[in-house]
Length: 277
Image (cartoon, rainbow, N blue to C red; front, side, top):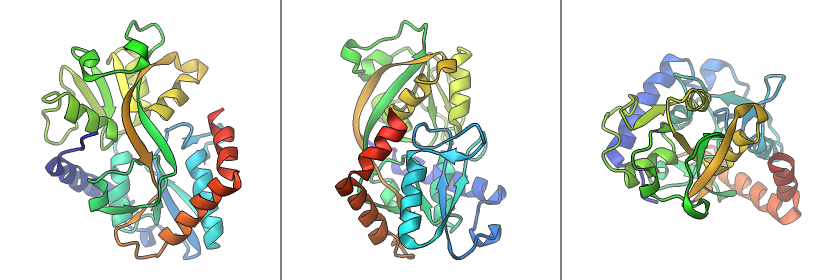
């Protein structure tokens, strides 16, 4: 998959830094997190990796994975959820870079643009992009595998700062014209919050939403959502946990050991069964 053009990615990072600062997510110390705490940034909803349960707690596969890392480090776990119409997924990397969190666990795909600013763990999950539609939609792709040609003339909604946006920019050139990537056009709606994506899709403001396939399936499994997955875009992505560039806290050795041991011991499969079935 081709990636977000470098200039646009830098613009997105600068905008997100300003947003993160103004919202009080700028430094870990400013929020009073104890030294014996691993502060992990995430962005809900992104089921089954991170979402809020009925009690309002952030739970999911990524959260359990982060807890395993915190336990291995002998630290308490604090989850910091960057979500909403103003602060969203695109604020995670700037918040990490400024010290607002120690690690990101947010279903974040490893790619060359992000590795300019952060370091990733070894991969812990393989994913593609999914096409989410209303249940009564007639949209479909041959053999459930979608190509760019199938999305021509279709109004699309995506989340800013994601690989969904990367795919649209690379495969549907000209569809995104706003340099700040925050305004709707006749063909695309771009928002920071997945909750808003679902709301606008259900209200008929867009024909399809492009988002990571596991999350698309997670939303479709919710009976009240009235949604279905119409197909996938083959992007061959891999998720990684994320730390500051250069790993100044020396977290990566432990993080990679935890992921390796979870997979070796079978505990990884248990977590998959817990959250994906």
